[in-house]
Length: 420
Image (cartoon, rainbow, N blue to C red):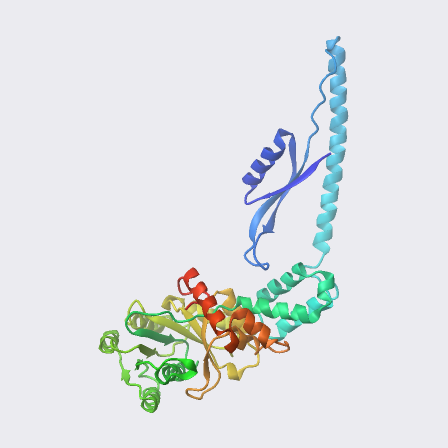
């Protein structure tokens, strides 16, 4: 007897698919919901899987019946015999299905480390050591288990390099795009994440031309008049770098000040730190940032020292600001960056800058995959291989620009990966 299994997005489509393939002879035995599709174990969708068999067609009579009653009796006997065999076969199938279901129910949800190859267990250990989220770990370990043969798993250095590349591929980078008129960049975020010093570092990058940047005309605006010493701090930075600083309190003042600085190349706006749970004050700050105009680039400052759950909550709470990228701060205060990498990857948020200390202007750099991967604990990073893959480093400057430009035009919007 011929058996079949078909999958479709819904039960109705599964039945239609069975009828189209096997006709009216198809008999359904069972159906269940399964997970199908997805990438690296993520984004799988529910589908319906049906199982059944093809009912045998009755054989045509070899010759016309001569005795109607006799032929009727033979037909009935044959039908009862076939039905008995069919029922027995169906019962055997159902018994096998029940046994298989019982075995699957008794099986643990995830194979123990003893059942895994040593390289798979080692990869999972490294990911856990670096505080990657559980879902991120499952996706990467699942990809290794699926894509590597037993022979390939014996080559741990290659498994480790592939694991690093999967982590690197999950990182999205942001690059500035040419703007008409002054480029307005507003930095938002919770209290105590280092927004003011980050604004001062950005001012140095653009005004002095640090890190290969061409010197530009820069202005700084602060609306943080409530924190003690905040205004004096940013004014001190401005005096040292020769960057004018303006202080405003209302949305109307902010609009006027930005209009007055229309001749500048870059306008940096420092905002008041707000708790993500303070919805009222967040709404007030959102109105102020909106006064910067429709072309404002909002960046969210997030410390790498945050717990993964707190990072995810911060990303969610500041979503109404329409931030285009994340500035990852305080990397010098933690040895683990897996929490930030995986939390940002799961929400597809690009990273623009990394800050690594309090010194202005030294402790800031444009975000690069290489810089993040080399901060992972326990990994042996082949820097030349990583830089070549992601178009980073001095030897790959042209290749990196081409890669970034291609991604820029293919991915419009705040969550675009590696945009220019």
